[in-house]
Each structure stands twice: as structure tokens, then as C-alpha cells.
Image (cartoon, rainbow, N blue to C red; front, side, top):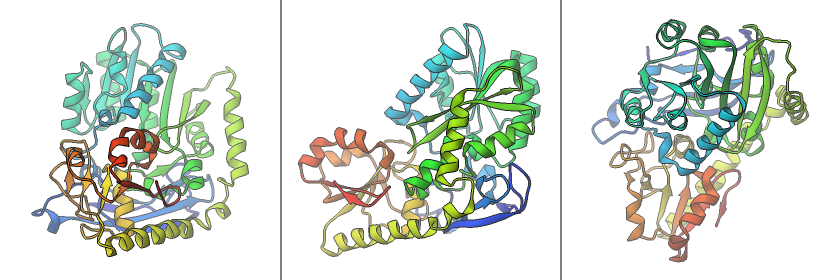
Length: 409
């Protein structure tokens, strides 16, 4: 079965759920394709629900993991320099606050070793990565990596071979998992009694405040805020003891959890809960206009791009991130609208974007071609990219920024 529809909340198991955003039917965002495989492309509903019991925002249509994270997964974290810098800084925080030399750190969904490569000297590291091609890249960096999905069974085997972990991290992956209970049970199995489980996920508050509906896709099953996470860990005799907002992926939240103790909880937890409460994240009312806000961005963007094309000018796109494919498909763009997309990921080059079927080419093309307009799909790196492409802009290329509001720079 390629996908199924749930009728209960992942965190509290309640069934008082309300649809707050429907983006239509989309193919998985990282399933880049080619002319031969287009006929086999599958699309699934992309609908977002709010749990009226614990306030978790989530997808209930679950696409099979092996269809999303297959043998040739297209996402390599280290292709993004800002992300490499972010994880280097993140690693320094963990070294200062949580670890001593020789400790074991396990990263769930470790990708190409982007976080763990910072611990190879002086610590013991172990990555868990389901995509074989990505795991192989991590090993080349000296990061021991197990191919597979993290589970209680795997956690027990790791304890036998490596001992317990002082830090377990799950970055941009905790929100991707349907059976969160299994993961938290496995974390409990593997974590030392004084250990820390730290997760980083897109933050619901940023998503709502900046209309970041394009960060909705099938891999992202949950859109976390502090309240439902506290509810989740409470069920497993764990507690959230620190939270931090971090400026990555359009706004993320880093959450620190541990086995329950009598140690104090950082004031930031209560402060952020209060911020969420004031922003309305814990009640359905705040989400009543979310569909309309997304539709407004779509209408402006489609009108702009098709107006430019109608004048005979060229529009291309910059970056082929997962969220870019949500945006392209929600807007109904095709190669008639967007001539090509440039991306540095070798695996994507030469393929077509899922659903919209726009050719992905190397950024080298921009050395000899100057498109009239470039749709910045990787808008979360706006400042970095605009600075990097100063020369291209001086030649007359204008960038279209789609989120949080449509503008030309």
C-alpha cells in the first residue's frame, strides 16, 4: 500500500481533528523523475489538520517510507553552505553543554553526516540513515553509519555494540515520522539516564506567521510547537527542559528532552509556551485564514510569472529544494512557465522536478545565460543567494521572492 489515511492524532491519539489547509494532490517532493518515468508518477493528498485536543498540526495522509526515502534519495544536506555552518555551530553548542570527550552521540536521519562530521575527533559517533546512497557519503567522512530506520529493536542492538548514548539527535527528521511513539521508546532504550534527546524541526509559529505553506510536504508529517511536544514526552516519563528558536529552514525550533529528573527546567520553555499562546497556536481560530493566505500568494505568483511569460521574457528558478516542489505544484507551474531550475545537487541535475516536470540543470548555465527573472525557490537563503549572485544581478537578472510575500528584487 503506497499510502493510508489516519483518523487519530499522532501525539495524543485523539480524533477531534479539523482540516486547516488543503494544497491538492502532489507527488513526493524528492522523487525527481525523467521522461520515461513520468507515466508512473503517483500523487497523494496534501492536507493539513489541527488537533483540537493537544494542538498538534499534522498530515493524516501517510505515504509509505520506502517511496519517500528510497535507495537514491535526492537530498544531501552538505550541498548547502549555510546549513553546513549551522550544524557546525549546533555541534559546538552540544560539545559545550552536553558532552565530554569519548561520549557516544547518535544522529537519527543523519543524512550525509553533516552534524556528526563535527564530532569525529574526540567523540564516538553513529549515524542512522535509511537512504543507502546518502549513508555512503557519510562514511566517506569517517562517520560510522547504519542503513535503516530507527526502532526499539535497532536501539537494543546499538546498546549491545556501542553502549548507551549521551546525546541522541534528530534534526529535520522527527517531524517526518508517523509512529513517533516507537522513536521515543527507542530513544529511552538507547539514552543514558543523564542523556539528552535533542530535535530540530520547522517551527509552526514561523510557518504560520510567514505563510510558509511550501514547507508542507509528505515527508513533513508534523508541524511542531512546544505544547504538543511536552504532551508527547510526558507520556514516556520524559520532559522538555530547554527550547531554542533557530534561524534555519525559514525558522526552526530546537527542543531538548531528558528522562524525568528533579532538575530545574529552563525558563525558555515557559516563555515560548506563552509566546505560542499569545500567537493563538493552541486554538483552531488562528488557522481559519491559513488556506486563504496560501491562495493569495499563489494567485499573485501565478499572475506575475504568467504575465512575464506573456511579454516574451524568460523565467527560471533557483534551487530545487523539497519545498520548491510544493510551491511549483500548488501553483500549477510547468516547463511552459519556468524554463529550467538550477541546482547544485549532482543527483538532481538532468532530471525533471516531480509533478511540474521542469528540467533541472547545473548553475553553470548562469555564467553564459542571463534569465530575465529567477524564481527563488530556496527563499530561506535569500540574503546569502542575493549576495552570492551579485554579478548575475548586475547583468540584469531579477529575483522573484515568493515567501512570505511575493516581491521582485
